Length: 297
Length: 305
Image 1: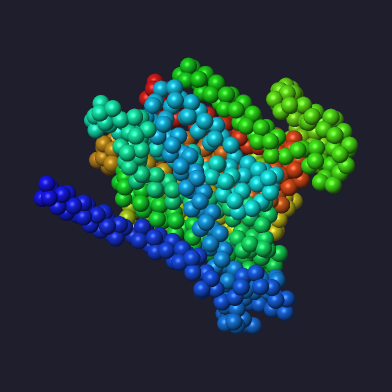
Image 2: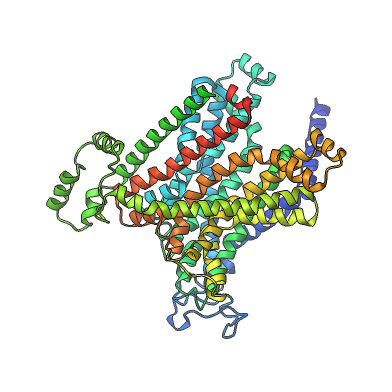
């Protein structure tokens, strides 16, 4: 008994070793993961790292250029915005908003979509037909347009944006969870669990969900990226998170007023946004390559 | 084929009706349109009068039935903000968005297909890597920021193009690039995988063995077969692209449907909002049906299943 346990433990650690070396060899996962970790660290440590209060206005210090330009100084490394707020500090606190939106939206839509997908794939038949019809309807709803309309009508705030995006971005989870479930629902171990008298809920949660999780994590990362971009777009259009919160979309919108003479006000938060989205996409694409080699393209 | 076609059309109609019910319910539940028209500080009598005038005092399902009935006759109501027939507003704005969509999809095909072909002819070389990086970057870059980037470089620094508006043909160049770039990654990746698969097929070996020139093998034999799935994906991408036009048209002040949507949302103009959302989902429904039908036509296995 103990031998067996030790054996399975060593097999488990061997598996982890293989998985890890695969991860380590995969350039996309490595660089993407590192880039995400950087943004995450900046977001979490913003209160420590930020040189200034991101909301502190100083009208005497308005529109200072970043340090590498003439007139720039190290006291405001990335310069200041139109209200004299330190741009670097706002950028760091902005990372918090993006990460928060990305993670919470992906969790809400992930829970919703995965449950629907599991049910559709496991029960099949009429349940599957109805759920797939709902997915088709969802797909036909223009995401940005409806998000804009609802957030504008209800009133923009962080919670509303998260909730609306969570309700709008679940379809991919449903499609993926459904197809994986269909592949495994007739396997012997599922049948034997059913023979043993397990309830459908229990089979779904303990037998099927763990096998779907790999693919769900990939969708989770990619949904996170689109949630972050949509939040920034909504906030840029003035219908999302509201000022004075330092959402990168708001920073770009405010910088747009100065696009002719101070283009860095648009460039800096934009590059931050691109960096984060690129990082998450690299990580997600890489994870997909590792979990399903045939999904490469 | 006919049976498949009819089934697909029935599905499209059912989806369209569901979307219209959903959006109607969503918009009706989140806001009192009478207050939106009159303003927050209007008197209670004025709001009540507006409610009765527009029929907002009736239950939502009756409002929907009325709206649906007149929508079938082409009457989408009157916009309280613009003071015009919504159908007229849409007819005015539609050509701009259609033109933009057509240009953008041509741009995406023009860039995505050659990139995919070159990447597949030289797999795992620096050419392949550059093409893949373009795809990865194109996927990650946010529309609205890419628009501003182009404005900074092409309009402000190089002074090649107008910053915004739709007065001349050159006003379409930047919006076309931004929207088109959205679809490049999917088209490029699919062309590349399609080409790579096809190049390993027996008939390509035969073509080489016959002594055909590389140009003939690659373009006449391989590309034709590789492009079959690309056609279907391009139609879906075109639909997604039109959804993205709301952001791009707003940045470039291009007076198309996307801009109309944005304006109506900012003014809480419910009838216009409702109609524009439906038009955009209509585009998607039509294009995805089209994509399914093209797929079924090209691949008989789908229509049997």
